[in-house]
Amino acid sequence: MKYKVLIVEDNDDINQLIYNLIKDEYDAVQAFSGTEALRIWNDRDTQPIDIILLDLMLPGKSGEEIISEIRKTSSVPIIVITAKGDTSSLVNVLELGADDYISKPFKTVELMARMKANIRRIGRNISSGSISHDQKIEIGGISIDPYTKSVFAAGEPIDLTQKEFELLYNLMLEPDRVFTKEILFSTVWQDPGYVDENTINVHISRLRNKVKNVSGIDPVRTIWGIGLKFYAE
Image (tube, rainbow, N blue to C red; front, side):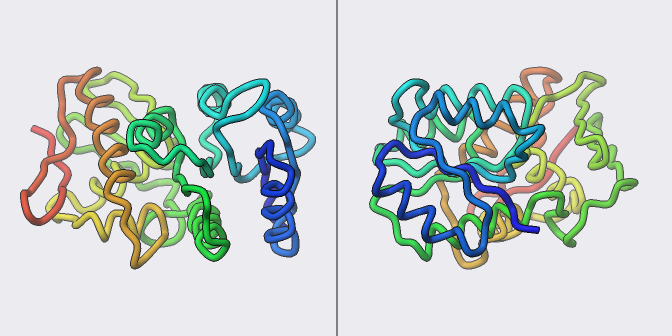
């Protein structure tokens, strides 16, 4: 069975380019406005969506609005494909909950690689290939359960995105290990050999803030010049 990809792009040529590129490997459905994209998304009970390729500048609803709406109920992988190349715009979409981004003009080989990297992590363990349903971890007032996808700190629930969840789970699996950003990007984004510092920094910052704001616990310690490790008093 092919994974279903929702392509959201108002430029007919780019939309069709992406469709032609992926149609043999994926079951692709096209949307040419934000409004149409949300209509398709809201019909996902009859037409499930596995991954979304999303432009930002759209008629109807903007890409940012779509991300915010989808993240209320789902952690489906969202890859932003955008001409907005400034750092603030890219940081903003990651903070809203996008998993990845590609700047226009993009290389088709990069798009396919990013799609495969995000597809591989659906329902898979970030370190061994399949999340163990009984490997709940509790350390220093933080508990994480891969079966229910729940996280609690100091007894309070923490709402994390899929990437934030995987980063925390990976760090807690080996709490004494210092992870380089290269290793974290390779395991969580399934993209060995490529590291996007901006992407990983935003996700780590959001993870730390979400846990700390609720519980006062900062779950990540920076080991300067080396990397990151799990930390909880």
